[in-house]
Length: 115
Length: 112
Image (cartoon, rainbow over all chains, first blue to last red):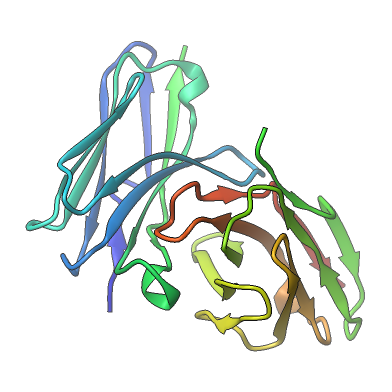
């Protein structure tokens, strides 16, 4: 059974720092991986989606990498800002349709960026 | 702006009541999902649907049912609400392959 782990559960950094959030998964047979952001009391927002054949995706100050063979993904945030404070969740899917396509979520890393 | 709209932001219901949570998406997504989110337990999938009138059980379907009569609408039904169903409920939708995965803002349900 696929398990997704995110360590640490919480992280506090000063504004301007570059940081890396980690995600690991137990079964390397994934179809794709997504990173989401969740603000307190709100729904999740998709940040980046990486197909299993890809190594990384970039959007603005965010860069997500995928190493399928080792079961790891990282989310790199450059020049962090207080507005980046949120919980970041990673999720993987096994396939494209039906239950295979369902996302399996990690429990997230709560990021706090201090001014 | 593309959207997943959940009918209520906050709900308080009594034990034993039948509760309806409505979700509407305007993106023509094939897939729709209902999750609940609890501290320490993360997101857990209750039910999902990948086509109109189709529904599949997720990880924790007990005590819940769903209805998808139209492509854009996916309803979650708590047949007889219990206090252990107090939670944040999140609806989501996506295209096949999880593209365009979009969540609603959530419904915080309290059962008293």
